[in-house]
Amino acid sequence: MSDKTLFQKIMDREIPASIVYEDDFCCAFNDITPQAPVHVLIVPRKPIPRVGDAVAEDQAQLGALLLAAGKIADQLGVKDRSKGFRIVINHGVDAGETVPHMHVHLLAGRSLSWPPG
Image (cartoon, rainbow, N blue to C red; front, side, top):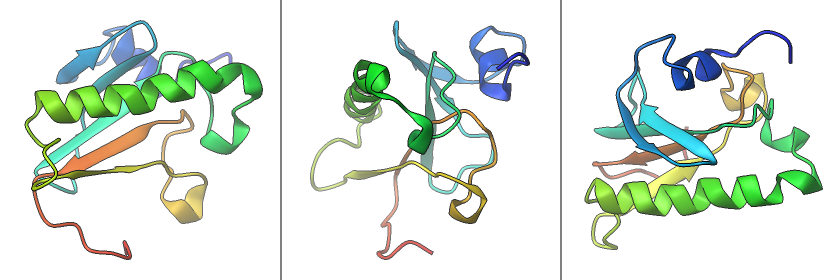
């Protein structure tokens, strides 16, 4: 990728965002169009376009995203089973992908129905 994605610009502090978590593998910030009271995007520092484009060398990166989701849920007080949270990864336009930089949505703070719409 030669041009920075929106998420890379946020991680580089070129675009402001409400960052809630950072480590060597990822950066997490509040979604600007939240779909739940808690809606955090967890973005890998390595720009993988979408989950289906990940390769074997991305395994540690992908695992780090899920571990970060648990840490963030705990930090935000939604990890407890009586509350809970959902994580979502979109791949492609029909799935709702709008930024070509893989990311995990962490949603919580309300009852989330199944199946999602």
